[in-house]
Amino acid sequence: MTVRLLVTGFEPFPGAPVNPTERLVRHFENEPPLADEDVACRFAVLPVDYGQAIPALERVSAVFRPHVAVHFGLAREARGFRLERRARTGIGADIPDNAGNRPGRCEIRAGRGHVPSGLPLNAMEAALRDAGHAVEWSDDAGGYLCNYVFFHSAAGLCRGLETARSGFVHVGPVAMPGKPDGAGLPGFGELVRGAEIVLRASISGL
Image: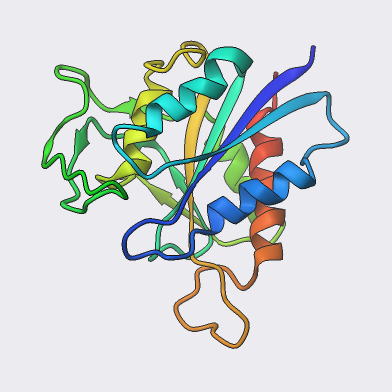
């Protein structure tokens, strides 16, 4: 069968005027990954806005109905690729979104516990390490929009994602020419190559 794969990133947000996941998704739109696989891909850059992120995701997922959804986000302290094991049930970051919304600390869905990633993370880690990429593990996807989208997607709360294999991968900042300090990835090519490995592993076994 043809596997339907949804790949998302985020626009820049307060404190991160450049978001490499936005550039990654735009790159994949022009040069689709997994060209040698029987895969149909869709791509979306999600707004960093609590009121708009899930509707934007559903505009794609409700029509496309992916088998797999891989969400990429920026973690400024990450070094390489950070595999998120679970989506937490709450909003915890006291940071405004791009529309100025500040929900405060609260549950995303009352009474709903943390939700595990549906991606084959062990296979993903092995493939990334075999290719020489730095890999980290995390049980906390943060308290901001990354975790918010991850929770909705992995919990099947988005139209079209009810039965999808869904998960989240954080990436570190990409080094800018002449400015390697503080970067989690040495260059954009490293991000693209690692992301392609993530996507290939995400559809394994389907």
